[in-house]
Length: 434
Image 1: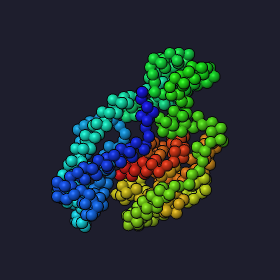
Image 2: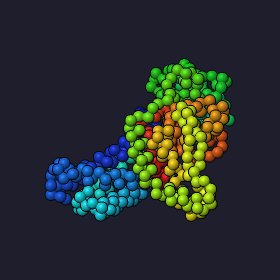
Image 3: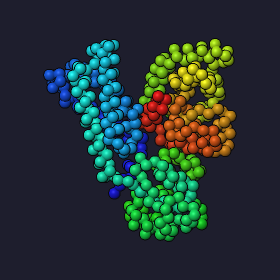
Image 4: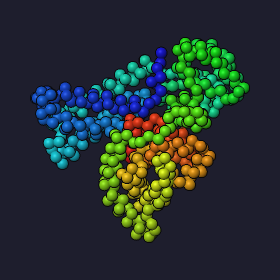
């Protein structure tokens, strides 16, 4: 039986990276006696081998990440996989050369670095091939059976069809109105028990459009206690599409549960915000000041744009950005380094914002969207961020539909806020910026 773990979770990429790090460490540990003529434990403990290996491993893993090897997808091409692993090893060697130029004691012995990276490349290649084969054998492609034709059920079917890397497929649809079907029609709603036992779906999604589609309660109870997984369309949307369906949030959920309650930033997230924002603020200061001076001398207009935005729990704060021109060499320089966001780092350091969270909106727009979409105010229960779950999953637009989709993704982050999800979004935000 295929388990629900097949449904994508961001933490799976983090677990995969942890395994890759362990493989690299084991490979170097085993090679030390042959390459250095020293006991491995002695080298890593007494000769600071562990500290010297950490920067090299970090460079290799980051290069793999930016090469798309942590997208949680099946291997499409073994040649491409080997190319990306080889590129990671090459970048690792270059990083050792750079570090040796700065301070040689921080580097690994030359032979150990060279043969360790070669062996790590082969080990990681074999591990990824084995993992893909095991996933194909144990999990295969899961199936979802759609019951009904409401808007959320159709949305789930479209999402699955456009995201083949999820290893999910739609087995079919049961509906009394075939003209509204979102997938091949396998029968009517009354055929649920027979069709479910014949197709054995991994999940049955209940998306009945209105009262004309009478819910087969007895059949659903029988299937539920027979081991079938049955979810409402709204819940299935969160599991599969990784966003909250605003149309399926009932008032009782907001009133009696703490799903979208405000959460203070955890200590690991606060420390990461402080350290990363400080580094970026200091590193970007010379470029931002140079860019601001260029803007000022080019046209004499103010270089900083100020907006009053809705912050954590709706508290207003001033958001500052550097102005970016439409075209020109100066504009290209600003966009390349994302200098327009540089002043926002001060808001992160002063705890008005976080590196990760819902995009800050102007106070007037937030008020208007709150009138159109009552659940909008719940997205303010997380600190606004420079990047966020909506930004890495959606193409930003100006249409109302885009605003609703952004709110739905922000609510997913508010509900599932954790350090692992925070880290996943932060890394993807850096990848998108680069």
